[in-house]
Length: 371
Image 1: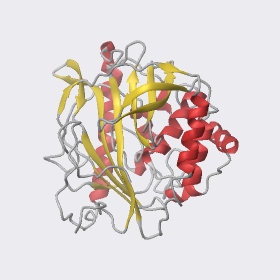
Image 2: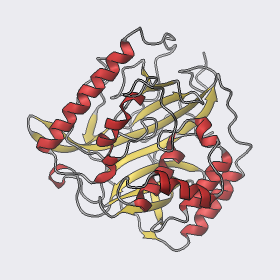
Image 3: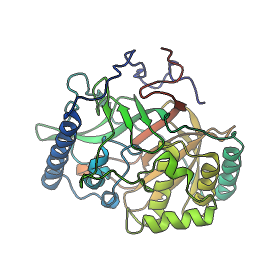
Image 4: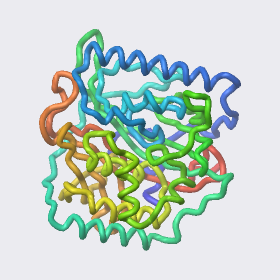
């Protein structure tokens, strides 16, 4: 698919080699509950810290976000309701190890910055139509058996306000690899990511807060759910607006963000990917950005939308020649964000490069890794 996951790249120190072979056992009995309870305690602690230290952040927090798709914190399926509260976030965050212990933290450095690319609405609908056609002609599309897994390997980093001894500063994570595996029905999953898990990763299986098996939906989809979505762009966009009503910073921004989540964090069928691009062309305020760079250092043309509430612009980055989706980044372009206004214009708030999407036969199998 995209560039070889194990090829050395100039964009930061490589985090993409994993200890092989993986331990193939699942978590011991009771261990998942430990992870869940630890996460819940951390969420409550973060919320208390946010109440006392962070200034209010606008509204993306109101909707539960899919932990397989979004940014800074891993949230098992049982924590969807609380996850949304943190997802808006650049709350004050105190670094600590993940649930699996030593070796799970991630280095940080100066905040990532970029040149703010110029935006123009002219020609954006035509560009998205070309991108849709390129997606539709990419091949027969992904075929996955019930016993297989969708693997996504991406390079990513997030910028946030870090507080140590009551002193706050803006830092960015070191660019690192995120590896996810999900069964097509969404009931089995695994994540390996520095800062969120230990070296062996952690399961994404579990019940919701009511002890029920979660049902896939638009902001927490399974591959099977995506395969059943309408591929008529008008019908699809209507569904997106209806199911995200009242969420985020306005219906248009939330629709754009939802489509971006699906493009970046899932492996949509070819017909659906083409429909998502055509649907995005119908969202008011969508523009073209002349140059954007993904987390792997690849330059491309971007389709973007400015969130007027936060001043952040969400950019979907495409190869300028093939129009293949490369990744996404969020850039502060207006005003100041974060505690104390530390997030200035030109700050890269989040960046992701999708390097590999594939169907594999086993959980924790990396395409091309051998063994």
